[in-house]
Image (cartoon, rainbow, N blue to C red; front, side, top):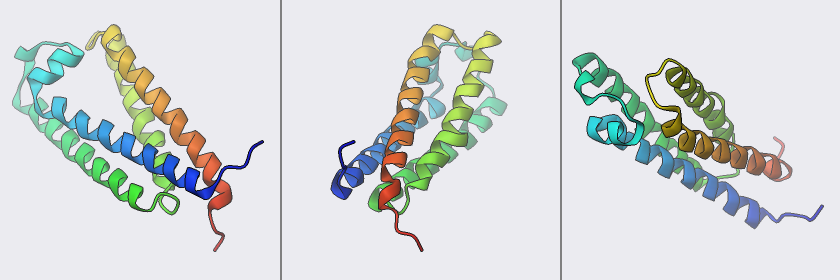
Length: 141
């Protein structure tokens, strides 16, 4: 197996953090704009109510916070690489689970969820791969 340099691992980890930050940052938009959310994922924009606005507001604040956490991770990618695993489990796995449940109940179209599932699956595999590749570069304390 070819050796991977610390520079390459650092770059791959930084890319992973930035891909996640961009993904999460973009996810805030449909959470704050019902029109954008309906355009992307379907649904009925007339179902907009104060309760759902409250829930989306809380979710968008958490998503914005996770975006900043991933940007912070990119500043010291080897030291903060564990954030990637926390992003996969429970964050991305939870999003996939909730959207699968929503699709099964007919709240969202499966066809509109497939691109999201492919994206999250690909990013998750990338995160796990670079995490594993970075193990030899973590200093024991």
